[in-house]
Length: 72
Image (cartoon, rainbow, N blue to C red; front, side):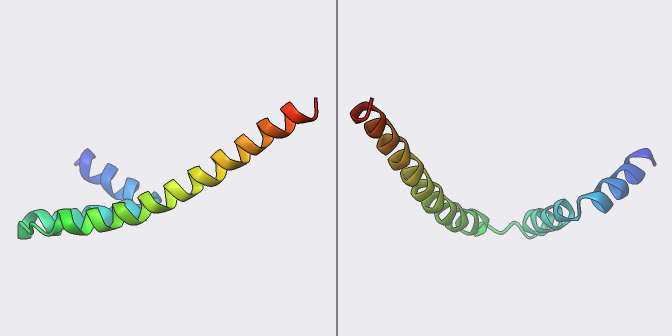
């Protein structure tokens, strides 16, 4: 009883978790083995975004260091 009330309270405040839970429950119930391919394609996309943002931050940091070394 408490767990059910807590679940409804939790999903009311965080509806995105309810969507994730429904997706994962459906995948588990259907025993779809394509879940890994779906997740891997999304991971690869986000991995490219993270790498690009890291390169930009790294280049800014290196440029800042060179600028400080040359102009001190």
